[in-house]
Length: 290
Image 1 (cartoon, one colour):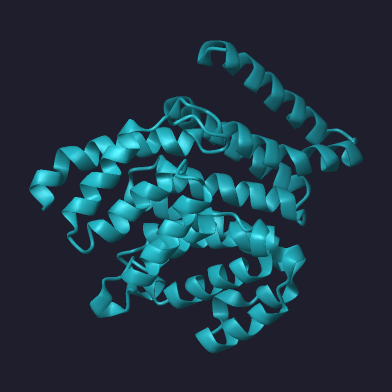
Image 2: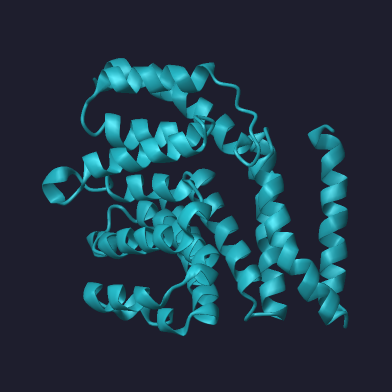
């Protein structure tokens, strides 16, 4: 199905859900919206046309805002909104101020989702590191999905605010949170959590507290768990580790692997296509960087 034929169906879906949200069918809406966020995420991740996603995501984001207005305490809706805002702000927005604004909203949505499922998280923003870590002991497997979304939204926020040293002071909390997610998730953990940890551990250079070798372990774990199909993890490995340590051999090896790979993979297609676009840029700029 071409993008041109998809758009009317997308519009029809948006109209249908908006009508439901403004009608008295509250039970139908709650059941529909709980699954809508999950299905929407899958559809986006399986799309191989980044521009279609770039053009379409604002409509979905506004839809999630409207659903939140009607049901403000629903964790699945809040998590879906956080995921969309974080993804759009981190991937498709080039303007720094706009990226900061969108990822801030993502983190706000994610914290509300956490607060509605785990009350000890409600004050996370105001806690120092030790008090924050103390609250993580109460997290269990039932909180894992919401913790994952909050961790992703936090990473998107920190990357967008990387020039703000007050925001960078939150990196240890972000690291502790993602490690706790891996503990409570066990074998069902999303492999991308290892990528996020790798990024968190390399946002700062080693002299300022970065941990590149520990990060490398997480990047390699994420790649292995995906059977090498997660090209986004490979590109983050290049950008966050190989470039940080000026390892051109590793840089060139992984960039070539990404460009030679088939990007089609369940729930990885969009990020893989974007990774190949980034790999082309990295290859073109390598001679100037190294």
